[in-house]
Image 1: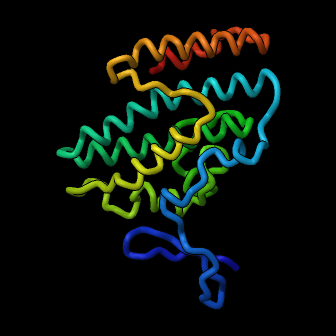
Image 2: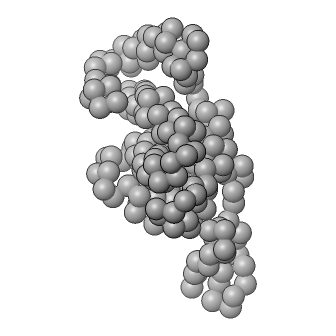
Length: 204
């Protein structure tokens, strides 16, 4: 039987029923971002174009917004705590899409992430995600650990198979328009209508 044990800082390690450590929880800098892409295991055809463009938009628009909230909320730890939970839920949503599954309701994303971990966005167990996102902290407290989240975010940006422009930098809007044109061309080549992004853009 396998059981989870947690240390004081919220990390987790796997132990067997004799108490021997089987696997120590990894930090953000040890997790593999987009492991299926690195391994060459990706879905083919129009479905791949659609889900990766969706993933790109969600990271570009939603993901960056949550990271900005974490960066700008240093004086508001409770706001940071809410933002990092929503960010974790967003990554789980992207993970489900990249796995070819039907996206789950937002209300279930956090529970799924902590129970089953992720396999597409990042190769991580539920306890590892809890450690990276600092979920050992008391919600509503006067501090919020976000350093590991920033490390994970940079790893995701570096490993993403495509450009994710930052709209807040000097030339970000121009780069964003160029990226949208690239996505539209990819969609046309795959026989898709880029209009499938419309609901995501309206929700952003």
